[in-house]
Image (tube, rainbow, N blue to C red):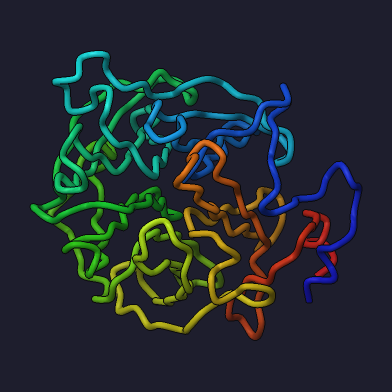
Length: 314
């Protein structure tokens, strides 16, 4: 089935795992990220990494998903190192939603405090009037007292928003409904399943919700898993590994971060993942691959290059 995706204009091919430069010829620096479509443009938010540390949250814009323009740092750690988000803190997996009721852009990310390793396990929130920022820090917390590490956001068709997060030392995955302004978590906090999983990426297809996660092996790649549910609050059923092809058992050397719906194309989704390079995090590469369906069940197949045109040839 991948054959439909493996042709097209050479300038419009995705090449997973290769260096991806922005329009200025500089490698994109947006790791563990997610994409927001807003007013005709895609905005890619991600961890702006130095060799080892965190610079903040970078943001890029594009109209075609290929050519990305760096818009700068949407969120910058405080110069005051005593601040929760002071220099030396750890910012991971930023995601942004637009709230139609308030007209605000809301960013959530996993926050670890300076010098505390991964013991804080907090969700952090920032807000802006502009999609590219700057985002003003609101605060951090553990949703309903639960540890919150790897996370993602999901906005349903009715604009209700949720945070999906790894909890209980990453042995439990949970989902919590956000307040109407998206700035805090409500008490509607649900257990999804117990397994040693992280890096959640969620999407909806044919009235079902799908969730892709990774195992917990530090920076090393591992086998992905796919879950399905009729409701975001569950129950969730495991369907096995959705990856196919070369090095599928190690998710092509990568780890899930987001599932991107392609605008203007029916049932078109891109699986986004990171090939982490812990010895030089800024040089971590990106793996973007099309999600395909076999009898309604999603899967991802490796391709060294592919085109969006394949979504029209299915």
